[in-house]
Image (cartoon, rainbow over all chains, first blue to last red; front, side, top):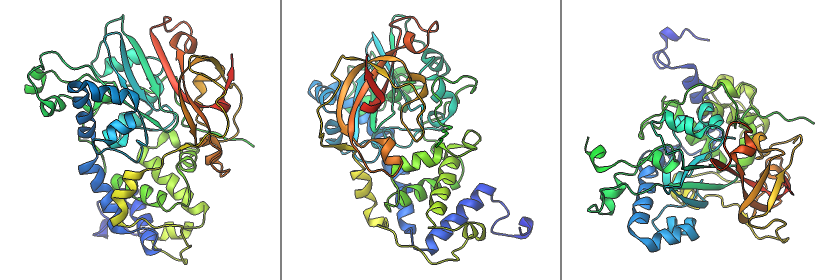
Length: 207
Length: 220
């Protein structure tokens, strides 16, 4: 190895940064990858595909009973009608929270997640603490997110072990009768669509 | 033939607390988005499929010690070197030393939106009738699986109920082993928490489901 301290390009780089740069260089020189395609992929998931997409689906379900029924019947088509489809959301199922049943989504085997509506999964979703305990002690998991549900509420956990992807439709918060669809979507958090959170109430959002 | 996955985490204890993070925190180091993009771009070449990728990741011997994007990176490097698309001396040198090999496809920037919007649907026409019906009680396979599988350890041998019949889908176990798609009926099977975790969960307080291909199940 060269002396890193005297290498202006590499002096601040971690071992992982160096490894990734090395592989990217090899792949580029061999003509396997298009550099502009890499930038387009990153830009897509940084700016265009994220949880605001799912929030729009949820808000529509809250205001439009016909759309909600469509989501129940064929979530893939209902979600695609808003422009969200494709990679890691090819086969969608929407599950609705009620006072009697709270839904929680996990992938115990890897990190399966509904990308078209939620974007890239958060680190905790991909990590061992969540993946190991969500199917065994979901109330304990919810407590770590600051959520306590009534003891009478059944917890329903969906382990995404195949190519079906799950979107939680949380319950509409009270005091939101006056809000339009965009105002409602702003209350819908990413975690509330995984089941590890609840939507914001208007006072919480104002804080 | 043996196969060891390090990714089958459901039900394990001792992994510590969950660390929630805000909605905008996508990446935690500048190399992470590069790994995401390299993985997606090389996946789009069609040299391997997503199930082969998952198998490469879950069999990394140091899986448990790696962050998730590190898992993706080292699995990508393994897939590339195993197929001689990249040689170890090139990885070490950080530059190409050997001629490239032909690839089925190359992902170009102009095609990125269409490729993402299309995805890779796994539903296939069914060639046999479904063996199980909605509401049917089933028992999950309980034995050693000497290859990649999507049947988690925590449900093996457990009794559940068919909650949904999804139609035939590409069978991950075969697809990951290079044996083609071999579509099989896919079901959502739900288990009572008391069946999965005796003594820990009151009956009816928790239901957990997996999505299971027909070969994972027998009638109960």
